[in-house]
Every structure is written in structure tokens, then in C-alpha cells.
Length: 198
Image (cartoon, rainbow, N blue to C red; front, side):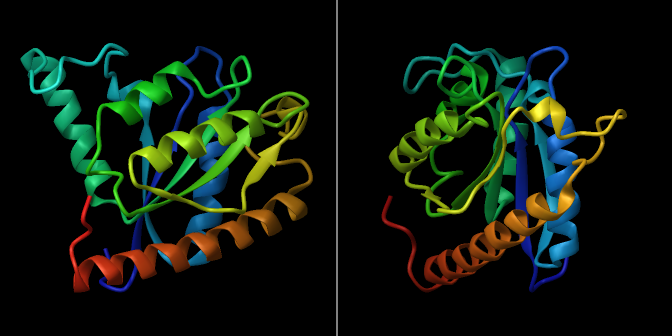
């Protein structure tokens, strides 16, 4: 990892069978890599395998769950910024994604979060609006610009690997990633000069 590059955690928020999330995450990872500002860590919450139910405050989960929690926590803590790739389920974010956010606090604090959403007619934007409120509560800063795929399954080729009409999506991703890098550097510099009082 280069000293002047930022560490970007790309979070795959869907855990369903047959999900489009990993495909969308591969696309935004390629765009972020092309941008040149970031070292990438693609974090698939399905692989993290944390339970939806969190333990009581101050209580430790069973050892196997604690190990998975700690492994995910280390990756989140190492990130300077996040891109959350999310679908919309019933006008909101997936339950597993919300639960994964709830397992942690300091790992999110004073870091910027951007969104790539997908879904039907709304393109997952209602999930994004839900997540903005959640991330504000854990002291993260969300980026104004997003990338959204409406009728998402019509945007990808027959192999499901790339947007069929990439120019608009790539342009939107570039604007979002430039803002994300700006916020990541600003917040990182601020935390180095003075610890975040969270």
C-alpha cells in the first residue's frame, strides 16, 4: 500500500442468493482502481457471516462470532473511506447490512461513506436515504453524489460483468470518487492533528 494512497473499503451489502451486489462491486472497484487514489478492500458481508442479532452492551459473543467480528472490524478500521453497494428491500436497506453497521462504532467514526445503489424503478435510492440516517448516527459523513442503477438487471451484459452503457455510470462514479477522496483526505488530516471526539 502506497503511503499517499487512501484505503477504500467497498462493502457488498446484499447477502441474498442470486444477488447482483458482487457484480456491481466489481464494477465500482475497477472504477476506483482507475481513479488512482485508492488501495481497495472489497468486503462481502455475506462472507463476514455475522449474525443479525447483536449481543447485549458490554457482553461478548461466543468465541467463533467474536473472531468473525474482530476480523471484519480490523478491515473496517483500516479503511479511510467506504463505498457501500446496496440494493433496496421494501423501501429500505437490507437487514444484514444494517445489522453489520450496528456491530461497530469507532470503525465508522469520522470517515466518509459513498453509495452505489441498484434496484427497480427507484434504483435503490430509498435504501441510500435510509442509510444516510444510520451512518450519521455512527458519526460517519455521507457523500452527496451517488451512483444508482434503475432497473438494474437491464444494465449488465449477458455475463453480468459490466454496464451495457458505461459512459454515464463511469462519469457518475468519477464525480463520486473525487468527492470521496477529498473528504477522506480532509478527515484523515483532521484526525491526525486532533483525535475525533466521538
